Image (cartoon, rainbow, N blue to C red; front, side, top):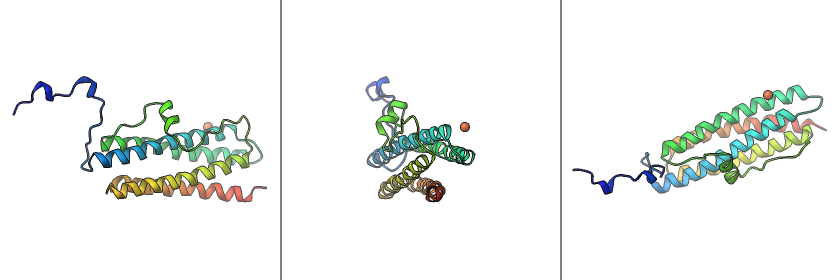
Length: 175
Ligand SMILES: [Fe+2]
């Protein structure tokens, strides 16, 4: 059977979503939406963690500065996996800093000075919130039988809970 000219995609349609997986359009759309919001949150958390790494002060400067760099590295490592998961499903992911700011749920901190305890406390709360958001994304994946994304999310939850553990232990001891 030959393909007529009318059936060929127009150049303007090249960027439209194409579903590669067997999950179906409804699932791909729901999971991609969820993952894109998570991607924006993860970029926001990455930059806040770096921001606090750069602006850390006080007598435990070295410890906290290094801890936050370790955390930032782990958070940044998630970004490529989240975005490529969306593409593997056939969805469209984020394109720019503007896209990040339109999708992020975790809040930025643009204050000129934040003391060490407040920095660590805020990151602890953000990581706890990220765990909740990851759990809710996991539920959506389960509803649509997307076991591969669910499995990645389980690892990210474990990593996020580890960061929360370290931060909460430090904050608990600070005066
Ligand atoms: Fe650094």
